[in-house]
Length: 110
Image 1 (spheres, rainbow, N blue to C red):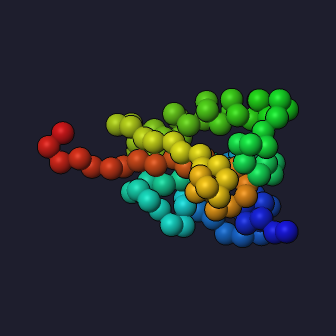
Image 2 (image 1 turned 120 degrees about the horizontal axis):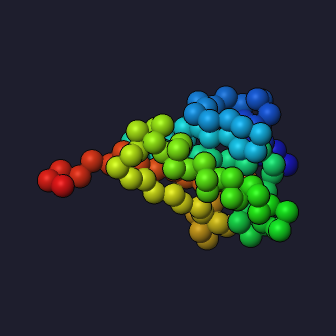
Image 3 (image 1 turned 90 degrees about the vertical axis):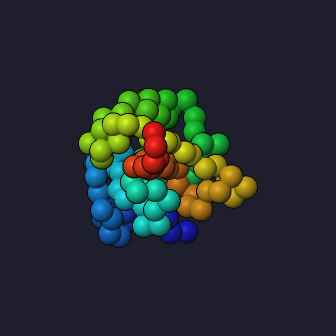
């Protein structure tokens, strides 16, 4: 079965990357739900949060530590939201663990 995120990680499918390192890639969502909507995707295929094991602890910590700096670089110093959808009932569409980083909302009068 083909995985679009594995194809992106391998360079077989296009993406607008904002970050790449040994463990993850981050790129703009093709169907953004916010002015800034980036997906942070592990290079290793893990289907969902439900499939994480002890061997993935360093990966999870890496992602968490990456987020604040990535958000600042994307102009989200005022705040951002992170979302992980898990399973079809939770809204997960691609069976490859990924985190949504969303922000850039403007709230008039605040």
